[in-house]
Image (tube, rainbow, N blue to C red; front, top):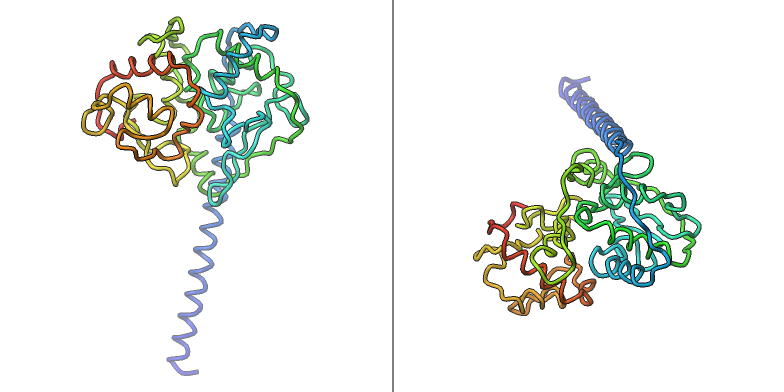
Length: 309
């Protein structure tokens, strides 16, 4: 065998070893990512909470719950629990994987049949399931500020729904989904100050009620309301908008009519449409007092440059 052939054979063997080595590292990396994400999803916590009154026989309360579910909290959106609240795919694309919102009805596949009032409070308001694991991606931080009466109304409405027979699928995460589950702030439990005092206000077109309502906006726009990349959001989504009074990058130059138009129609003052990640179709029927309250509160927050969330 010539020296040239020996050298070529050595190069091929080294290339093969390199390929095997990279493949082995990839397998080890994937395995580590799998166990890290599984560990994060299985992590448990405890929290003692008081239950709330669930007025199942109160038609006004049930109607209030439907309004909140459909037009404020977005629970019945097509990328969440679905219009019938029977659950469905939140996302299903590689490399993110499958994330599934559970069936909240009393039908086959429903997951809340054994929930007590305290379980509802822990899950909806604190992002903690009855088994102590954290909800994944569910934006409980958005709902934390709502009063007991509204949490009870939401549950009363959900319990009034007809049963939907649809099995709740388990999450099946791809490599990016695993990375998010292991490292990203997608667990509401970790974002909430569970000992903080909730804002107290009567419903109405006031700044005080707007401070309660704004909780439904912080999951996307951030606690500082200046927008930015949405944790756990679809990678194709643009950064959320700055909704502080910043003149340059926020809505400081908007009038109330501009804000109401954006909420109800998804159109900016110049007529261009907002991205579909802003679920304005849910807000078409938002109570005018709630829109006014949001506007009044937003005029009081500090102006911030875009992107700081």
